[in-house]
Length: 310
Ligand SMILES: Nc1ncnc2c1ncn2[C@@H]1O[C@H](COP(=O)(O)OP(=O)(O)O)[C@@H](O)[C@H]1O
Ligand SMILES: [Mg+2]
Image 1 (tube, rainbow, N blue to C red):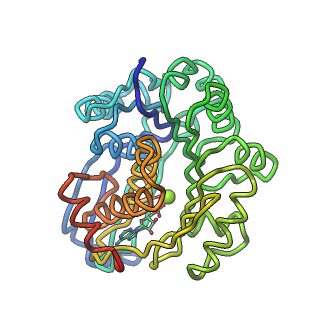
Image 2: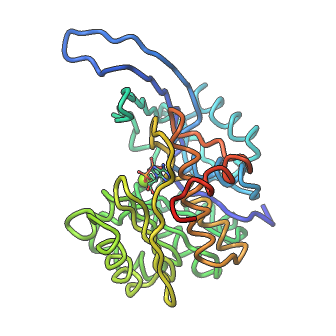
């Protein structure tokens, strides 16, 4: 376990992606244009992104003792991910997410995420050595607050880079989580949970970022839906518009984004460069259905050239 660049803490799920022209109403049928069955879930997507970007990465999440769990772990292994920290839980099926995408790129998720496939505080305690051994710990805030807090506390106590993706849903734990974080990244909906409404433009998102910066993190990224992402750090800020790429499905783009952001920070690249790198990784993920990233060096280069103003 020694020598990992990062460990992603979060959901591991079987993803079934179905592309249809139009989602049918009741008693109607739609022909599926494209079907993909993938390793998914935000924790796994972040780990796959990191591996594709060249990081040595581990995964902490939960799958069942079922055949699906075997396949998910097999895929993660062949992606180059260290799956030793993943827990196999008896008595639960592995999580399943069905992503139904229409021709306009609107997604609907049908989720069967049994409670037992979420991480507990005890699960995190059992993985402390792995968390301490990684240079960065990415914590996905859709996991129970107690588990997210335990992971962040452990990483912070070992002086690791603590990266949070999402919005703390419990105001009681939010203050401590933010105080433990180096990085907070929120999509527009998550920023809306924190501030009451999603940021409507670059200025609002930059202001939200500055406000969050005062609560602990030293880098904050906030999305403006359909427009771009605001990045704020103590001595700078930048709004990076989204790249000019036709969107098929934004699923997983935030995971690719946060993975690239983490890697840029680990490499100690300048923050403005890291910001564009993150947006390029997101852009490289929106052109295909499903959350599984496909982050090649060429795809990133191509995306960097498609960011307006770059
Ligand atoms: N064409 C694009 N180029 C670059 N980034 C994009 C593009 N379209 C969407 N994005 C970004 O992708 C991210 C999607 O995030 P999110 O909704 O959290 O995805 P998920 O949670 O499914 O991984 C946002 O930061 C958004 O700005
Ligand atoms: Mg997201």
